Length: 194
Image 1: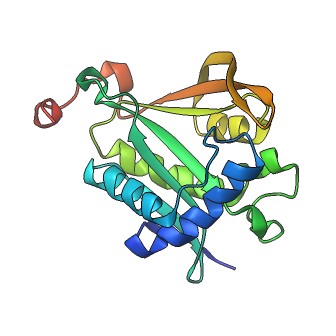
Image 2: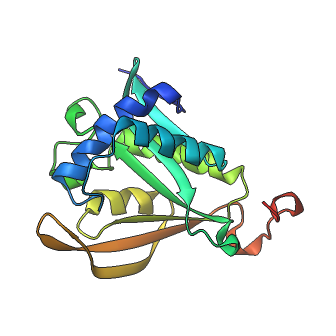
């Protein structure tokens, strides 16, 4: 079973919404509490692409089994060379190389598919204007933390009890990775006024 990584298409919004809905309703991996409709997912994909960020999917055959994207870290212009990454896998594909059968929290990222998605995302980001990428995950998601650390991310922050979902407080971890020389490489002139 070959996993294909490709750029997102407009018609992927339904599959992406289906994958994401599990994380919204059944986990604390996202702090969103209401499943966004497909139209909203369509709008989010368009907003990310229109801003010039990469958005990619993993497919087995024609079926989307995971997705990954970068987005604005913060809206102030001084942050324009920093982005935030997100990655989600279809929890229903355990036993097919998608997730490893551990708890729902661990299913999030530590398999080959999550790593393939993140490697491609980082490759695309390296070609762009970005010098830093951040990832936020819940503190009790060792698979996500291990995945990011295996790709060179380092933990830079822990925020206790910052989220409330499913009747409990949730801590988050922020991880960071330098891109294209990071702080040692100024942005190119062509990207300074975007």
